[in-house]
Amino acid sequence: MILYGSSLSPFVRKVLAYGAEKGLDLELTPTVPGDPNPDFRSASPFGKMPAFRDGDFTLADSSAIIHYLEAKFRDPPLIPSDPQLNGKTIWFEEFADTILASCGAKIFFNRVVAPLIGRPGDLAAAETAERDELPPILDYLEGVAPDAGGFLVGGRITLADIAVASPFANLAHLGCELDPQRHAKLRAYVDSILSRPSFAPWIERETAFLAKRAA
Image (cartoon, rainbow, N blue to C red; front, side, top):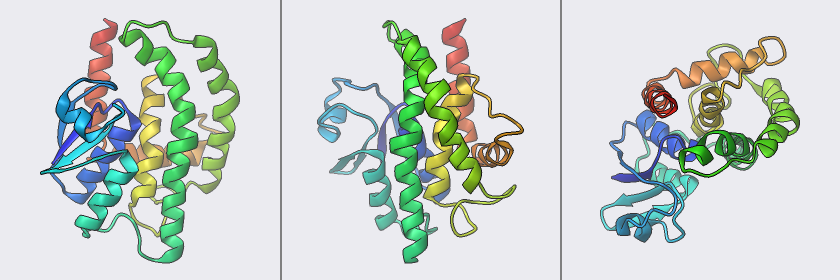
């Protein structure tokens, strides 16, 4: 099974971490948005990542890919079947994708990605997002974060934890530290998820790549 994209994307990283927690062998083919690679474009008609190939079957969008894999590989379950736990898991994934990651993207793209691709970033937009948009999101997560070593839904690792934690790797690459007083529970929770073997190797590679590009 092939995954097209870059782990610097929180959505690609989410799929990679999900696959690792599932014990699946996902082969990452490095790809950038809009890449003309015909194999990528046949899987992602609009050139967005991640895209996915499983034999002759192709799919785009991180949520669609994960739900396909969850249906095909039932064990271990990372999306609960219990109606309430299922609803909570899907909510946290949607929140992570459309609110948390969208805010983080304004900061990460303008400060990191734009310079990498030779474009000027909108630093004012990044500053506004970090100052005005991010704090209430972090406050919400502080209120729902589990105690140390815990998980968001059902007392075990689920897609909810994977989706919520992934954008925080991008914030860490930016040096956006969580306040140890205001967001103490969230900080401990995020650290515990991102230190798992499903995330840590990818984040280490990203850190080394960004350091090399900045040198």
